[in-house]
Image (cartoon, rainbow, N blue to C red):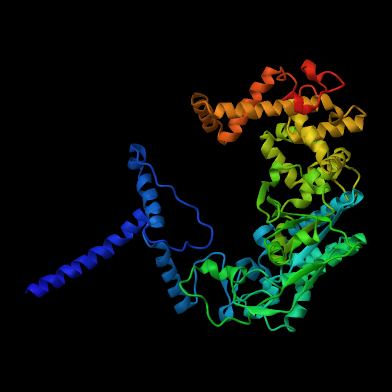
Length: 577
């Protein structure tokens, strides 16, 4: 009897432990768990109020929140996904289509092969042809203007997995009433003389000569084979401008275990165990760059999709190019040595940036081309053909005429550039009046001393570097004295900036001042350092009566220099501290 009682207690303890462990895990997170792969949108815990309680909204939102935050959620989901995969070859992952013999594809790649992708993005076959023809026309116009300014524009089409390995696609019925966007663009580019390199057919030919998959069985992107495509691309780019780019040298291939981008689709399945019985292996080799005195290192901009990362992962691009930027889907710009710097395309001067490169490569794959150029061709033409002031005037006119906001009017214009009379028809007849200014700015940026001088002048005139560059270009165009040459003003600005640093140090050591600054930072949604610097700069500008010297109000405002800075025979700056 006593033994039975101890047995019952043990069962009770085990049962309670199993019941409360998920609750404790959700509360304490005491066991670190591998997060699920894919995009997760966090649901915030709802706030209880009388209104949300009476409407029933609180209960619904709380149920959704708890369903996403219970303990051991990740291994539970992985175990269930493993059951679906092992027993039924099934998944609920929306971005994965399961093919034959364990092959995985993007659903877009499958529908592209069967001809059903077109009508997901275009209202009709006829509309698709019209829209694609416009894209080709705008790409040619953009190339014409860029080429006039020393920039080469070309297109690159990475291989499509569905067309490379169609034998493993899930069964489907081909829609014969549509057409393939990749083939259409390639044909129209050839007809109009637009430079384009298309890799699907080349990879189809290479497929039977290698013993490894050119795009992995459980991945959506190319991996090491991207190096061979990059070599072809760089040679093609050099031929367009009659110059030699550094050459890629590929060492002896060796096998490695599949990992990373090799299995990016498998990762989305969130399985407990890796998929077995893979086809082939994943190749790797040492990649180096050879160059000599006859070769050039140009600046290149890639605009397109994630297939670019395959090239950047294996090719030392910083040894091939002086500078590389990647504009992901013409939405986010990545730059820097490891592409660690990001910037929204909407926040940049597209015209100035385009003119700053030697090559611009529109980088895409077949199933992405149903969306055209993701807005790049239209934006490029608007910026290259119409100056900024006129664009703003057009946007205001459209807003008034259509009774919409300026943001809506801008969106309408950038989706339909043919709304402007200058961009109708088949002939390119206009050029942006901003181009000469941006070419000057491009040259100024190459001179670090000049840029530093403009940054100093920007302090005196309450202007950003971007504003000062534009103003300096205007002075060059108009034959006015340059801001760069106003040495007294520049030295005074440097002196003021030293005072700003000293004042910031003093403010940091004053608790009452820092309390005010911290409150301002919270109200403005700024960092503490930015708010502190803004206050210090404002005080120093007031001290030297610079608050009325604003570039936007008066580009040629006379700076009220203190007496010691007004003589031509300036003292050595070090003595002015």
